[in-house]
Image 1: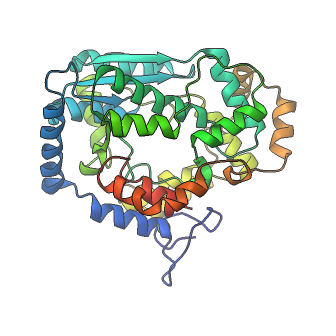
Image 2 (image 1 turned 90 degrees about the vertical axis):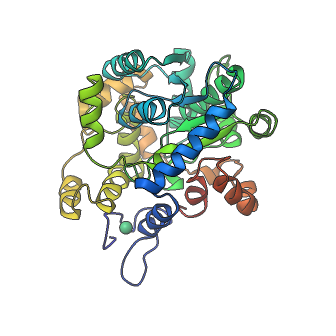
Length: 374
Ligand SMILES: [Zn+2]
């Protein structure tokens, strides 16, 4: 195990230096150097805000902000509106698993901030089948079609509204960077899984393929900005502000604004031995929110999703019998590289991708994720 965080040797692709510090800690330090917070971060954000406002002149919205009702996206929406002076359109993708708390949070905060909320509701039978198809594929991440759904919702809404900027709120400081093998997603890979494992004809699912990306980025000029990199989102001051200002309620567990994550985490732990908690706990140790001892203690206790009732509820909603699910847990494990994907092409494009990430055309930490968290 890493001498600094709680990443262990079981994490795919993790490397340790002579002092026993893991490659994820080094990645964190690199990202920290690249993305300052404090006065320097604020200066960068105000520069970005001026650019985004200028691009939004004459349009209804300056930018699109992806929201879930959870901590990080809610704080980001507040920051974009109040601290950066932007006119955002909040966009939410509902795959049928939104918790009531998240839904209420979302409606309340958009109302309080006077921000329009656009929700794309995925057709439920199709949404359910897409998840089931990834479960049958025996790959680690069973929510990948929803990640495509979110990307599709953000880009398509931006293109329709003529908004040039999509604001994301991934936080390497609070959430960490997930190992690529745990949640790899691309259009070719998704298409391959659907072709082999999907048992219904899809009428609503919209993939996000290379030609779409080409059109959105190069023809429509859409840019992705991860503003969270430049402000301090570490620790409880975020929850406190959201609760005081917006009467925001914590969903209790990371990602539980979407209740399917109980199944996502349970499945990954029981089939692959991946304890998703190490990513977030390690991030919190690096930023000093918790001590390494507290993180180890947390890892030694059973996670919230080790709850028979909760898992049975998820399986029932997905239409999976316990027997069928258990058989999948026992079946040989597969990874994205066992199916067709764009990954070989992505490896070839390493340098242009690095450049596009630094230019904020792609999400800023994507380069680290694809080339260092492997
Ligand atoms: Zn580490």
